[in-house]
View 1 (spheres, rainbow, N blue to C red):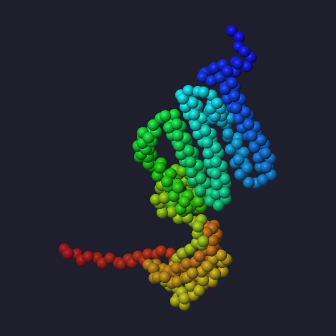
View 2 (tube, helix red, strand yellow):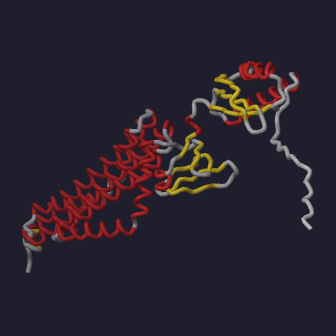
View 3 (cartoon, helix red, strand yellow):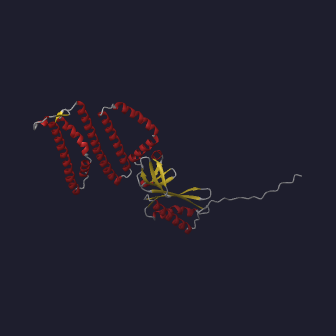
Length: 361
């Protein structure tokens, strides 16, 4: 049997003529080649622009184009090309579902690029002003990706005919059960959010919690690491830190110093009157120190007690100790020069001679 030249294009194949199939394939190939060349052109042109600019927008555009998968774009192209064919409803519905799933996956890839771009850019800016919030930015990026993929999966299942209503209800019940099982972890996670937002401390601050003192090294989603003044690393759960009363030494504008000393009771009153003025001169002679007061405080059990208060105009602990050392040494020299003796705890023991008892015999 011979077929006339040109009439073979009208032959039927899977419900459509050969002509229609060739037309569909030609449209699909043309659309695919157009997108392929457009992708190459955009990457090349945007790459040259990115080399001359300092902004991140062009880098973002390039990454979006690079994450455009040709295979995922091929499925929607095939679906559009199928409109020139006479396909069954079942076949057309299958192509439509496949095209929607491919588009959803491609959108997910684009959204991942946007999330990663936002996380990297925000974290870079935050590290310059608030290092603690960088942890929260990473956690927010993770939660955004989790929500994105959850939405994509649910939309995909709904597109292929799965009833997601019962699935969502089940996820809600399961979520409650999981939340109860990991409530301690969730508590630490929410505590980290509270620490980052409220900022009771940031990385680099020296804090005092209970009996521990150290410098904050990192603030994680569950724990905070503190390097103690004796060298070891202390790990606090974030929920414990939120519940604790802590002192942040890094935020001190100045340090208040209080000390007392006592002199012996044999000290003449005239010399006692000179002591507050003497202390004031000694304190005011130090730089970065503000004198507050010096008083004859009380008649103690074994000494005449004075109290001195001054402020070191810096939160630096080493400077505070240097000034306190200089003040105490100078005070001891001045007291020695004035013939005023510091007291030490003493006890007087009075021994009486025992009286012999009369002989009753």
